Image 1 (cartoon, rainbow, N blue to C red):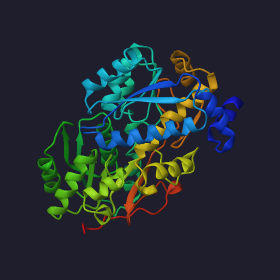
Image 2: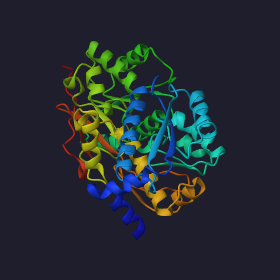
Image 3: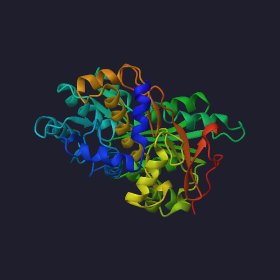
Length: 404
């Protein structure tokens, strides 16, 4: 374990001492890493943020001498959010482009078929956005998710609602989710818990992830007059729902979306500005800009220098992708190899890896058993951790104020 600690210190070091290492690493054959990302289609907002995270990680690694003294090159293909294209992409990355390694795409929907391709060619696949339960029932030995298990991400919201005094606790809830392995398990878990806590379900809708007309779904939620709205969404559908709620002056006491509100300024601009986001909840897989974790402060600083903006506008997708790369570096450094079979063995060894999302340790299925999720809320233009209290930057705002 001491070798791992030394490796971490070397990786996090900055300054003139890295110059010689970087120069020598540039004389060696680069390590080519293949990735398929959703740069268009339903997942494009997340896919582009994932690309930022991977590119930022590559820059960080290469500034510090690369992996085992070799520079890193990323071979990124766009899958257009398609389960068919993601399979084609990983087959090309492995058999045509001859990438040394592959890292995961965005979403459980795409990770599931992508991981099968990687397994067929005995490639390890470390990923950060494929935590749906169905991804880990395939019996694969090569798949490792650095983020918390998806199904658990809304538990903090359900527990917060339960913690409210009985006189304040909302009595009804409406649910709407894509039939997506990322969104639906979260919503199902939240519904089961809230029902146990005495919250009556007045509407429950599941719709195809290919849906583009969200109006009928929004209308059913509005007609239910539910006090809690729980949505299994990405950015496009939650934006459509909020626009419909605003237009019809539907003001539930609490709104939470599995994803979308975590997209920073992309979200607030799409719904009419920060005042419209006030009080909206979103779960978080264990990262926010101010969290005190390995290399996080430097990652945030480097992100702002490279891409601009504000820290609060950094998507959690960036941290997920960056954490994937951090885990790869530490595993390769520990075993002094990028051989895929050896990496798979190391990732299954029970070692703990440090990332910007916090510690990572994999169970037999490849899930991060140390991953925890927090409840976040938009307050006065910032996305803040609000529950549990031990990790809170502010107290939860409840009930949600009416639309501006």
